[in-house]
Image 1: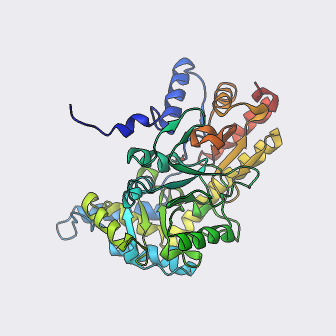
Image 2: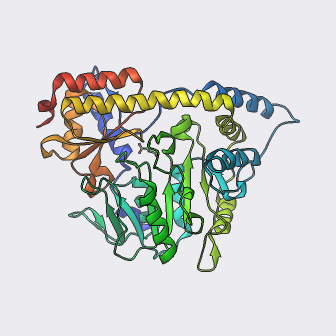
Image 3: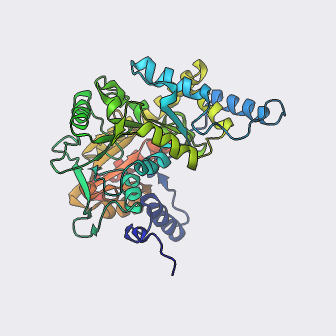
Length: 411
Ligand code: MLT
Protein backbone atom coordinates (compact mmCIF):
# COMPACT_ATOMS: atom_id res chain seq x y z
CA UNK A 1 0.00 0.00 0.00
CA UNK A 2 1.33 3.43 -0.88
CA UNK A 3 1.65 5.52 2.26
CA UNK A 4 -0.29 8.75 1.91
CA UNK A 5 -0.35 11.90 3.99
CA UNK A 6 -2.83 10.78 6.62
CA UNK A 7 -2.87 14.25 8.19
CA UNK A 8 -5.47 15.13 5.51
CA UNK A 9 -7.88 12.73 7.19
CA UNK A 10 -7.88 15.01 10.24
CA UNK A 11 -9.29 17.96 8.30
CA UNK A 12 -12.99 18.78 8.17
CA UNK A 13 -14.59 17.16 5.09
CA UNK A 14 -14.50 20.38 3.08
CA UNK A 15 -13.12 23.89 3.24
CA UNK A 16 -15.46 26.34 5.05
CA UNK A 17 -16.51 28.27 1.94
CA UNK A 18 -17.06 25.05 -0.01
CA UNK A 19 -19.38 23.85 2.77
CA UNK A 20 -21.32 27.11 2.61
CA UNK A 21 -21.52 26.88 -1.21
CA UNK A 22 -22.85 23.30 -0.98
CA UNK A 23 -25.51 24.30 1.55
CA UNK A 24 -26.61 27.20 -0.63
CA UNK A 25 -26.71 24.98 -3.73
CA UNK A 26 -28.94 22.50 -1.86
CA UNK A 27 -31.22 25.33 -0.72
CA UNK A 28 -31.45 26.76 -4.25
CA UNK A 29 -32.31 23.34 -5.65
CA UNK A 30 -35.24 23.16 -3.22
CA UNK A 31 -36.26 26.81 -3.69
CA UNK A 32 -35.48 27.58 -7.34
CA UNK A 33 -37.33 30.91 -7.27
CA UNK A 34 -35.60 32.27 -4.16
CA UNK A 35 -33.77 35.51 -4.90
CA UNK A 36 -30.63 34.89 -2.89
CA UNK A 37 -28.23 37.65 -1.89
CA UNK A 38 -24.69 36.41 -1.37
CA UNK A 39 -22.75 38.17 1.36
CA UNK A 40 -20.78 35.08 2.34
CA UNK A 41 -17.37 34.58 0.77
CA UNK A 42 -15.39 37.80 0.41
CA UNK A 43 -15.48 37.83 -3.37
CA UNK A 44 -15.67 41.16 -5.19
CA UNK A 45 -18.50 42.11 -7.55
CA UNK A 46 -17.23 45.27 -9.25
CA UNK A 47 -15.40 45.00 -12.60
CA UNK A 48 -11.70 45.68 -12.98
CA UNK A 49 -11.05 49.41 -13.32
CA UNK A 50 -10.27 50.90 -16.78
CA UNK A 51 -6.56 51.47 -16.02
CA UNK A 52 -6.16 47.76 -15.25
CA UNK A 53 -8.13 46.70 -18.33
CA UNK A 54 -5.98 49.00 -20.50
CA UNK A 55 -2.80 47.45 -19.09
CA UNK A 56 -4.15 43.94 -19.66
CA UNK A 57 -5.03 44.70 -23.30
CA UNK A 58 -1.68 46.20 -24.00
CA UNK A 59 0.17 43.28 -22.34
CA UNK A 60 -1.92 40.80 -24.35
CA UNK A 61 -0.88 42.62 -27.55
CA UNK A 62 2.76 42.39 -26.47
CA UNK A 63 2.36 38.64 -26.04
CA UNK A 64 1.13 38.43 -29.65
CA UNK A 65 4.23 39.94 -31.25
CA UNK A 66 7.56 38.12 -31.56
CA UNK A 67 9.58 41.17 -30.43
CA UNK A 68 7.64 41.68 -27.21
CA UNK A 69 6.50 38.14 -26.39
CA UNK A 70 7.48 36.89 -22.90
CA UNK A 71 7.92 33.33 -21.77
CA UNK A 72 8.47 32.31 -18.15
CA UNK A 73 8.26 35.28 -15.84
CA UNK A 74 11.15 35.80 -13.40
CA UNK A 75 10.19 33.48 -10.53
CA UNK A 76 10.31 36.23 -7.92
CA UNK A 77 8.39 38.75 -10.04
CA UNK A 78 9.12 41.33 -12.75
CA UNK A 79 11.26 44.24 -11.53
CA UNK A 80 8.70 46.80 -12.82
CA UNK A 81 6.09 45.42 -10.38
CA UNK A 82 8.42 44.84 -7.45
CA UNK A 83 9.69 48.41 -7.80
CA UNK A 84 6.15 49.85 -7.98
CA UNK A 85 5.18 47.88 -4.85
CA UNK A 86 8.27 48.92 -2.88
CA UNK A 87 7.73 52.57 -3.73
CA UNK A 88 3.96 52.83 -3.28
CA UNK A 89 3.11 50.33 -0.56
CA UNK A 90 6.20 50.81 1.60
CA UNK A 91 8.51 53.74 0.84
CA UNK A 92 5.60 56.19 0.77
CA UNK A 93 4.58 54.92 4.22
CA UNK A 94 8.09 55.33 5.56
CA UNK A 95 8.87 51.58 5.47
CA UNK A 96 12.29 50.54 4.28
CA UNK A 97 11.43 47.57 2.05
CA UNK A 98 13.49 47.03 -1.10
CA UNK A 99 12.15 45.48 -4.33
CA UNK A 100 14.26 42.36 -3.81
CA UNK A 101 12.53 41.66 -0.50
CA UNK A 102 9.21 41.38 -2.40
CA UNK A 103 8.14 38.02 -3.85
CA UNK A 104 5.32 38.29 -6.37
CA UNK A 105 2.81 35.42 -6.34
CA UNK A 106 -0.60 34.36 -7.57
CA UNK A 107 -2.36 35.56 -4.44
CA UNK A 108 -2.30 35.72 -0.67
CA UNK A 109 -4.33 32.56 -0.14
CA UNK A 110 -1.62 30.35 -1.61
CA UNK A 111 1.14 32.35 0.09
CA UNK A 112 -0.57 32.13 3.47
CA UNK A 113 -0.94 28.38 2.99
CA UNK A 114 2.60 27.83 1.69
CA UNK A 115 4.61 30.07 4.00
CA UNK A 116 4.49 27.44 6.78
CA UNK A 117 6.96 25.39 4.69
CA UNK A 118 9.69 27.63 6.12
CA UNK A 119 9.17 26.17 9.59
CA UNK A 120 10.09 22.87 11.15
CA UNK A 121 7.58 20.09 11.64
CA UNK A 122 7.47 20.72 15.38
CA UNK A 123 7.16 24.49 15.28
CA UNK A 124 4.22 25.56 17.44
CA UNK A 125 1.87 27.95 15.74
CA UNK A 126 -0.23 30.57 17.47
CA UNK A 127 -3.41 31.71 15.78
CA UNK A 128 -6.23 34.07 16.60
CA UNK A 129 -9.52 32.41 17.41
CA UNK A 130 -11.57 33.01 15.25
CA UNK A 131 -9.14 32.74 12.35
CA UNK A 132 -8.98 32.53 8.54
CA UNK A 133 -9.12 28.71 8.17
CA UNK A 134 -6.28 28.51 5.63
CA UNK A 135 -3.65 29.18 8.32
CA UNK A 136 -4.70 26.20 10.40
CA UNK A 137 -5.67 23.83 7.59
CA UNK A 138 -2.30 24.26 5.84
CA UNK A 139 -0.45 23.49 9.09
CA UNK A 140 -2.66 20.45 9.67
CA UNK A 141 -1.72 19.16 6.22
CA UNK A 142 1.94 19.61 7.18
CA UNK A 143 1.40 17.48 10.29
CA UNK A 144 2.00 20.34 12.68
CA UNK A 145 -1.26 20.51 14.59
CA UNK A 146 -1.51 17.21 16.44
CA UNK A 147 -5.00 15.88 17.07
CA UNK A 148 -8.38 17.58 16.83
CA UNK A 149 -10.68 17.51 19.82
CA UNK A 150 -14.30 17.67 18.65
CA UNK A 151 -15.57 18.76 22.07
CA UNK A 152 -13.40 21.87 22.33
CA UNK A 153 -12.94 22.21 18.54
CA UNK A 154 -9.23 22.71 19.14
CA UNK A 155 -6.04 21.25 17.76
CA UNK A 156 -3.71 19.84 20.39
CA UNK A 157 -0.51 21.51 19.18
CA UNK A 158 -1.93 24.90 18.20
CA UNK A 159 -1.89 27.84 20.59
CA UNK A 160 -5.05 29.92 20.42
CA UNK A 161 -5.32 33.66 20.97
CA UNK A 162 -9.02 34.25 21.69
CA UNK A 163 -10.42 37.43 20.13
CA UNK A 164 -13.61 38.27 21.93
CA UNK A 165 -15.89 41.17 22.77
CA UNK A 166 -14.08 41.37 26.15
CA UNK A 167 -10.71 42.14 24.56
CA UNK A 168 -12.19 44.14 21.66
CA UNK A 169 -11.11 41.30 19.36
CA UNK A 170 -7.44 42.17 19.89
CA UNK A 171 -5.26 39.08 20.42
CA UNK A 172 -3.11 38.82 23.54
CA UNK A 173 0.38 37.32 23.46
CA UNK A 174 -0.11 33.75 24.63
CA UNK A 175 1.62 32.46 27.74
CA UNK A 176 2.26 29.01 26.22
CA UNK A 177 5.32 28.30 24.07
CA UNK A 178 4.86 29.28 20.44
CA UNK A 179 7.22 29.80 17.50
CA UNK A 180 5.12 31.24 14.69
CA UNK A 181 2.37 33.81 15.19
CA UNK A 182 -0.28 34.42 12.54
CA UNK A 183 -1.84 37.87 12.69
CA UNK A 184 -4.35 39.37 10.27
CA UNK A 185 -5.21 43.06 10.49
CA UNK A 186 -7.71 44.34 9.50
CA UNK A 187 -8.95 41.02 10.65
CA UNK A 188 -10.69 38.32 8.75
CA UNK A 189 -13.26 37.42 10.06
CA UNK A 190 -13.96 39.91 12.89
CA UNK A 191 -13.48 43.04 10.78
CA UNK A 192 -11.55 44.76 13.58
CA UNK A 193 -8.07 46.25 13.17
CA UNK A 194 -5.03 46.28 15.45
CA UNK A 195 -3.74 49.62 16.67
CA UNK A 196 -0.05 50.33 16.25
CA UNK A 197 0.72 49.90 19.96
CA UNK A 198 -0.88 46.44 20.00
CA UNK A 199 1.06 45.34 16.95
CA UNK A 200 4.30 46.82 18.30
CA UNK A 201 3.84 44.66 21.41
CA UNK A 202 3.85 41.54 19.23
CA UNK A 203 6.90 42.75 17.30
CA UNK A 204 8.87 43.43 20.49
CA UNK A 205 7.84 40.05 21.87
CA UNK A 206 8.87 38.22 18.68
CA UNK A 207 12.26 39.93 18.67
CA UNK A 208 12.78 39.03 22.33
CA UNK A 209 11.75 35.38 21.98
CA UNK A 210 12.81 34.54 18.42
CA UNK A 211 9.23 33.90 17.28
CA UNK A 212 8.29 34.81 13.70
CA UNK A 213 5.15 36.82 12.89
CA UNK A 214 3.22 36.09 9.69
CA UNK A 215 1.27 39.28 9.13
CA UNK A 216 -1.62 39.09 6.68
CA UNK A 217 -2.40 42.61 5.45
CA UNK A 218 -4.77 41.62 2.63
CA UNK A 219 -7.37 44.14 3.80
CA UNK A 220 -5.11 47.12 4.55
CA UNK A 221 -6.74 49.30 1.86
CA UNK A 222 -9.89 49.44 4.01
CA UNK A 223 -8.20 51.11 6.97
CA UNK A 224 -9.85 54.40 7.92
CA UNK A 225 -8.58 54.79 11.50
CA UNK A 226 -5.39 56.86 11.84
CA UNK A 227 -3.60 54.75 14.47
CA UNK A 228 -3.93 51.47 12.58
CA UNK A 229 -0.78 50.47 10.66
CA UNK A 230 -1.15 49.42 7.01
CA UNK A 231 2.04 47.39 7.20
CA UNK A 232 3.78 45.64 10.08
CA UNK A 233 6.97 47.34 8.92
CA UNK A 234 5.55 50.58 10.34
CA UNK A 235 6.50 49.02 13.70
CA UNK A 236 10.06 49.39 14.88
CA UNK A 237 12.09 46.20 14.61
CA UNK A 238 9.60 44.32 12.42
CA UNK A 239 12.20 43.52 9.76
CA UNK A 240 13.96 41.10 12.08
CA UNK A 241 10.83 39.15 13.02
CA UNK A 242 8.01 39.53 10.50
CA UNK A 243 6.87 38.37 7.09
CA UNK A 244 4.00 40.27 5.45
CA UNK A 245 1.42 38.85 3.04
CA UNK A 246 -0.41 41.11 0.62
CA UNK A 247 -3.09 40.66 -2.00
CA UNK A 248 -4.47 42.52 -5.03
CA UNK A 249 -7.84 40.83 -4.54
CA UNK A 250 -9.65 43.16 -2.21
CA UNK A 251 -8.02 46.51 -3.04
CA UNK A 252 -8.07 46.09 -6.83
CA UNK A 253 -10.65 43.36 -7.49
CA UNK A 254 -8.17 40.71 -8.68
CA UNK A 255 -9.97 37.72 -7.13
CA UNK A 256 -10.39 36.24 -10.61
CA UNK A 257 -7.09 37.53 -12.00
CA UNK A 258 -4.85 36.32 -9.14
CA UNK A 259 -1.95 38.40 -7.88
CA UNK A 260 -0.35 38.90 -4.49
CA UNK A 261 3.03 39.22 -2.88
CA UNK A 262 4.97 38.36 0.23
CA UNK A 263 7.64 40.46 1.88
CA UNK A 264 10.48 38.57 3.52
CA UNK A 265 13.10 41.01 4.81
CA UNK A 266 16.76 40.15 4.36
CA UNK A 267 17.42 40.73 8.06
CA UNK A 268 15.05 37.91 9.05
CA UNK A 269 17.11 34.93 10.17
CA UNK A 270 16.41 31.99 12.44
CA UNK A 271 18.71 29.11 13.31
CA UNK A 272 21.49 30.68 11.23
CA UNK A 273 19.35 30.56 8.09
CA UNK A 274 17.99 33.49 6.10
CA UNK A 275 14.23 33.15 5.69
CA UNK A 276 14.52 35.45 2.69
CA UNK A 277 16.91 33.06 0.95
CA UNK A 278 14.80 30.07 1.96
CA UNK A 279 11.63 31.63 0.50
CA UNK A 280 13.53 32.58 -2.67
CA UNK A 281 14.72 28.97 -2.95
CA UNK A 282 11.23 27.64 -2.34
CA UNK A 283 9.63 30.09 -4.79
CA UNK A 284 12.26 29.30 -7.42
CA UNK A 285 11.63 25.57 -7.12
CA UNK A 286 7.86 25.48 -6.81
CA UNK A 287 6.55 28.57 -8.61
CA UNK A 288 7.00 29.71 -12.19
CA UNK A 289 5.95 33.30 -11.75
CA UNK A 290 2.64 35.14 -11.98
CA UNK A 291 1.64 35.74 -15.62
CA UNK A 292 3.22 38.73 -17.37
CA UNK A 293 -0.15 40.22 -18.32
CA UNK A 294 -1.35 40.00 -14.72
CA UNK A 295 1.83 41.62 -13.39
CA UNK A 296 1.35 44.48 -15.89
CA UNK A 297 -2.23 44.79 -14.58
CA UNK A 298 -0.77 44.93 -11.06
CA UNK A 299 1.61 47.69 -12.10
CA UNK A 300 -1.39 49.71 -13.39
CA UNK A 301 -2.88 49.63 -9.88
CA UNK A 302 -0.10 52.04 -8.89
CA UNK A 303 -0.53 54.43 -11.86
CA UNK A 304 -2.15 57.81 -11.18
CA UNK A 305 -5.19 56.72 -13.21
CA UNK A 306 -5.39 53.35 -11.44
CA UNK A 307 -5.10 54.90 -7.98
CA UNK A 308 -7.92 57.39 -8.67
CA UNK A 309 -10.22 54.72 -10.10
CA UNK A 310 -9.51 52.30 -7.27
CA UNK A 311 -10.15 54.94 -4.66
CA UNK A 312 -13.65 55.19 -6.04
CA UNK A 313 -14.10 51.43 -6.07
CA UNK A 314 -12.91 51.19 -2.50
CA UNK A 315 -15.44 53.86 -1.45
CA UNK A 316 -18.15 51.78 -3.08
CA UNK A 317 -17.37 48.79 -0.85
CA UNK A 318 -16.78 51.00 2.19
CA UNK A 319 -20.21 52.47 1.63
CA UNK A 320 -21.63 48.93 1.53
CA UNK A 321 -19.91 48.21 4.86
CA UNK A 322 -21.59 51.28 6.35
CA UNK A 323 -24.95 50.26 4.87
CA UNK A 324 -24.68 46.83 6.50
CA UNK A 325 -23.48 48.22 9.80
CA UNK A 326 -26.26 50.83 9.97
CA UNK A 327 -28.86 48.32 8.75
CA UNK A 328 -27.94 45.73 11.36
CA UNK A 329 -27.75 48.27 14.17
CA UNK A 330 -31.15 49.69 13.27
CA UNK A 331 -32.60 46.17 13.27
CA UNK A 332 -31.23 45.73 16.80
CA UNK A 333 -28.19 43.52 16.16
CA UNK A 334 -24.89 43.88 17.97
CA UNK A 335 -22.28 44.38 15.28
CA UNK A 336 -18.51 44.84 15.08
CA UNK A 337 -16.11 45.64 12.25
CA UNK A 338 -16.92 47.34 8.97
CA UNK A 339 -15.05 50.55 9.88
CA UNK A 340 -11.53 49.67 8.71
CA UNK A 341 -12.65 46.47 7.04
CA UNK A 342 -15.01 45.01 4.45
CA UNK A 343 -16.20 42.44 7.03
CA UNK A 344 -18.98 42.83 9.57
CA UNK A 345 -19.09 40.53 12.56
CA UNK A 346 -22.48 40.28 14.17
CA UNK A 347 -23.60 38.56 17.31
CA UNK A 348 -26.34 36.04 16.65
CA UNK A 349 -29.52 36.95 18.53
CA UNK A 350 -30.95 34.82 21.30
CA UNK A 351 -27.74 32.79 21.63
CA UNK A 352 -28.42 30.92 18.40
CA UNK A 353 -25.44 29.01 17.22
CA UNK A 354 -23.76 30.26 14.04
CA UNK A 355 -25.13 27.54 11.75
CA UNK A 356 -28.65 27.91 13.15
CA UNK A 357 -28.47 31.60 12.32
CA UNK A 358 -27.07 30.78 8.86
CA UNK A 359 -30.16 28.62 8.16
CA UNK A 360 -32.56 31.24 9.52
CA UNK A 361 -31.04 34.11 7.55
CA UNK A 362 -31.05 32.06 4.37
CA UNK A 363 -34.56 30.80 4.85
CA UNK A 364 -36.23 33.98 6.06
CA UNK A 365 -34.26 36.72 4.32
CA UNK A 366 -32.58 34.72 1.54
CA UNK A 367 -29.22 36.12 2.57
CA UNK A 368 -26.04 34.05 2.60
CA UNK A 369 -23.37 34.83 5.17
CA UNK A 370 -20.60 32.87 6.85
CA UNK A 371 -21.09 31.16 10.22
CA UNK A 372 -18.59 32.43 12.77
CA UNK A 373 -17.98 28.96 14.19
CA UNK A 374 -16.39 28.00 10.86
CA UNK A 375 -13.50 30.28 11.86
CA UNK A 376 -12.89 28.70 15.25
CA UNK A 377 -14.52 27.97 18.62
CA UNK A 378 -14.63 31.63 19.67
CA UNK A 379 -16.50 32.39 16.45
CA UNK A 380 -19.45 30.40 17.75
CA UNK A 381 -22.46 32.67 18.23
CA UNK A 382 -21.18 35.10 15.62
CA UNK A 383 -21.77 35.56 11.92
CA UNK A 384 -19.80 37.29 9.15
CA UNK A 385 -21.22 39.41 6.33
CA UNK A 386 -19.14 40.99 3.59
CA UNK A 387 -19.35 44.40 1.95
CA UNK A 388 -18.29 42.99 -1.43
CA UNK A 389 -21.82 42.55 -2.83
CA UNK A 390 -23.35 45.04 -5.24
CA UNK A 391 -24.71 48.14 -3.57
CA UNK A 392 -28.24 47.32 -4.79
CA UNK A 393 -28.12 43.87 -3.19
CA UNK A 394 -26.55 45.21 -0.01
CA UNK A 395 -29.34 47.76 0.39
CA UNK A 396 -31.94 45.12 -0.43
CA UNK A 397 -30.45 42.72 2.13
CA UNK A 398 -30.68 45.31 4.87
CA UNK A 399 -34.23 46.21 3.85
CA UNK A 400 -35.18 42.55 4.17
CA UNK A 401 -33.57 42.26 7.60
CA UNK A 402 -35.25 45.44 8.83
CA UNK A 403 -38.67 44.67 7.45
CA UNK A 404 -38.61 41.23 9.07
CA UNK A 405 -37.26 42.61 12.36
CA UNK A 406 -34.92 41.06 14.90
CA UNK A 407 -37.59 38.77 16.37
CA UNK A 408 -37.69 36.79 13.09
CA UNK A 409 -34.10 35.76 13.62
CA UNK A 410 -34.51 34.52 17.17
CA UNK A 411 -35.59 30.93 16.64
C1 MLT B 1 -12.96 35.13 2.74
O1 MLT B 1 -14.13 35.21 2.41
O2 MLT B 1 -12.58 34.91 3.90
C2 MLT B 1 -11.93 35.29 1.70
O3 MLT B 1 -12.45 35.88 0.58
C3 MLT B 1 -11.42 34.02 1.29
C4 MLT B 1 -10.12 34.22 0.61
O4 MLT B 1 -9.67 35.33 0.37
O5 MLT B 1 -9.53 33.19 0.34
